Length: 481
Image (cartoon, rainbow, N blue to C red; front, side, top):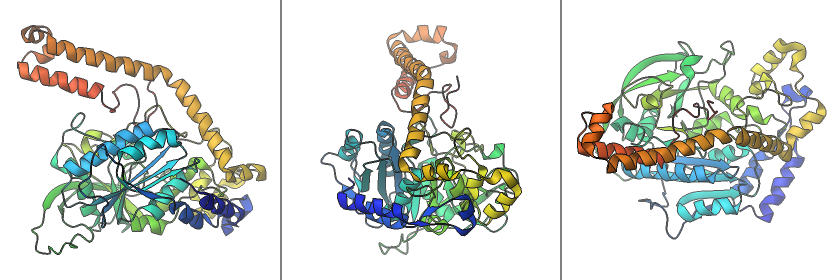
């Protein structure tokens, strides 16, 4: 927990600001002592060793990890985190090659002990840091990337990116070894069309084909990766091990950093993105920490643009297809937070909304501001002051969460009713004469008795799982009805 000493220094850094020269005229300020504040917060992180973990890890604590599984939860969404972290540990222990070593880091943004205690009682975590208040997306992410994770690679899973297990996706060898394969591919140091380096692999469905074109969305390529080609993996002294070669197809995506493509995405995304941590450290911290006069809705977008100035990332074919938007093709994780968003995807109708925020801290800011002309005045002095205040940011997000909860209430009720119906359907399949099922259910007309029972089990497993049901939410968690 955040102790008194930490809280004291957390308050001190709010008193000191470092203003970017080019942004000063508009009142944009970035806190000078955010690094120190996070350093002090990180001192309160602790190794979490539960008496009876839900799933015991083979090696804990991991001393020399290849990858850090990084979780950021907030807003009392630890029920989602519980599913996500359990599935991630199961995947690492059962699916990925045994030589892949991992650590876990977790920051919770102010959910409270009533919600975080269950996580602390259930999982072995190298760095656990439940904060007393919601410090925002940027502060939480920066803590994970810059202060808590030690591995050379980091997989950002937030609290609601669930592994695609056999209930919903074919367990191909590439999907089962998705994290190891992603690291091995990144270690090959591929570059995009303009020699920007690939810094990682996104392991989620993406909508890039809907707005990106060649060469930013490159052609599919073939590679033979060595799954033993992991950083520092020769620490055990086995330098003569035979390579673990695997043929893969991959596609490089690079953000159009000129802004002529209208979109800033293509090189970075928060959820289910695996990255070389040194690349993220080189990009720098996310803006929008407490004390920054920075718009909360543009935190990820600004960071994505800054990442795109230097780097690209890639996708790997994990299934039988190459459609980036389909989770069955290139994803190992997908979003389960449907209907429970913590902040709007867009800043429309919010105070001080302006695309200019995406370019703060980059050479493009000055040019884009001149291009915008009079529209470049984003905020009044009073509104800029509000952006500095953590309380104001959280009130804005809290209001949005309340609106979302009310708007999506009907969808949640319908989904629950559907799950109950599926459990009932499974019971009927088990108890009904199988000949009658084959006669009256055309899709099962050629099923054996065993296959009918397997279908019943599959239906009930999905009904009782955290996997979203189709027809209720889009890929971003927005209600379809």
